[in-house]
Length: 216
Length: 252
Ligand SMILES: Nc1ncnc2c1ncn2[C@@H]1O[C@H](COP(=O)(O)OP(=O)(O)OP(=O)(O)O)[C@@H](O)[C@H]1O
Ligand SMILES: [Mg+2]
Image (cartoon, rainbow over all chains, first blue to last red; front, side, top):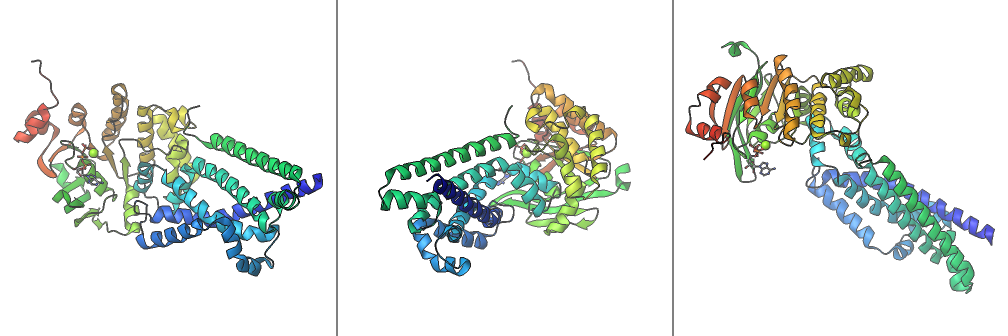
């Protein structure tokens, strides 16, 4: 049983980390684009903003379990099968990307307009402003976002257990729901709780470290 | 006057500036010549900040044009950024990057925008910081500095770009009275060096001491213009007299 739990934990971490990473690969540029093209952004573009906005809203309003089933053909086309840990990364990423885009957007929008203007006044171009001002200045908030994203994806990954998604959620459902082995289920859930706690703790610690605005 | 021989650096030519339907500047013109210190004064909301922002390409205009050494600044970013490198601006609320050290704040634009050599920029940045008495703060973050110190860093940050014109928008308005002087001294020393500057301020004694030319603005119009002596000692218009009186107090 210990081996099973260890494997499950490993599978869960694998799914969560990879899909969050992939989610950021899509969500970070997307969130940046949202910030830049919004009406009070540095390069407003109503049409582009609206299109991205709608796509993200639609994806985000589909419940994860439905999304999981909805994109099964897509998952199968990419991974070759629709169950197991690697396959679960696909729906997890699809769910993570828009969530991450929104969080990135809200983080970047916290950056003081005056500071952005000062950068413009020094002749900085869009690229410099995005990377050296927006992203750098919002990094505390962005990191808090990473923590929240990881936590949410962890929750989603457990849900994927319903369709044999692998990992801790899978174990909890198989033993607790189908075989009435409540003990194993409780232990599994406990491991999930601990993972979440560690995640939150490390995330907050790191973000406090890099926050230069705080009075020490 | 010798000014006529000097080269015109910035020329704001018959511009109109509106915010939505609210017209702030109508057919407004102002030239800044090499080596002169122009001080713009006037009541709140008359358009002083707007003029500085237009000179730095931060505000779109509806009519007229802005030229920089004869080159027209059009709406294209390439043209605007080229001019912005030459025009340094210091803001009322400093606008330092909170997550960057003092040195990083100063070095950012020379390195990333002007693509200058990092080592050379660092050397110059340290020299400039030393000049304003902040050498030992190079590795601090903005939050660790007082308002006056932050504003001196902001001035250094502008100077490190080697601007041909410096724009100051009420740079002491957010400061505690005892910090005003340390910032104004820095600006005075720049004037002595012959730097070209456009200064918006409510510090009348400072304006009188530093200005080669005073522009009195009222409701987006130049109401009166003259040397510091002319404007402060012998104001011609009623509005200017009234405005200057508002800075003096009488015991009733
Ligand atoms: N972003 C804006 N949108 C709409 N109106 C604006 C905006 N910025 C300035 N204005 C208006 O333009 C006019 C001139 O503003 P400006 O900031 O240039 O005045 P100012 O002379 O600098 O005043 P102060 O001494 O208070 O700084 C004011 O009436 C102001 O309300
Ligand atoms: Mg102003």
